[in-house]
Image 1: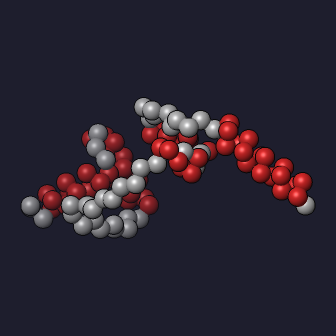
Image 2: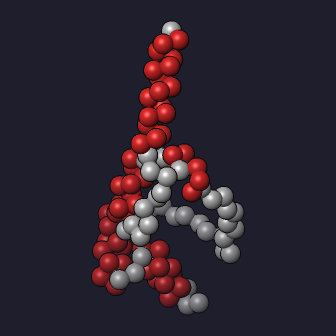
Image 3: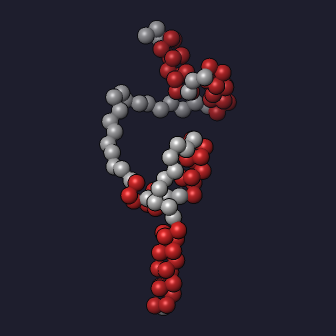
Length: 97
């Protein structure tokens, strides 16, 4: 049993030693997504920064049926804005803020 424990620990040491301690800079969203799909923040303890964030405004999430969301996403792409921005603009226009 002690031998398997040593082998198991050695595998962990080897795995940690093979990882780079540097998170690649200037990644696109897609590159970052692929990177974090295969990595853990626990692998980069020296790179972890703790922060606190308090939104200036209260955010509320609203459910939108999938087919309607697809149309909103398409319109947002056509206008070069995020879905959130487009929906907020439409709501502001509708209630005349």
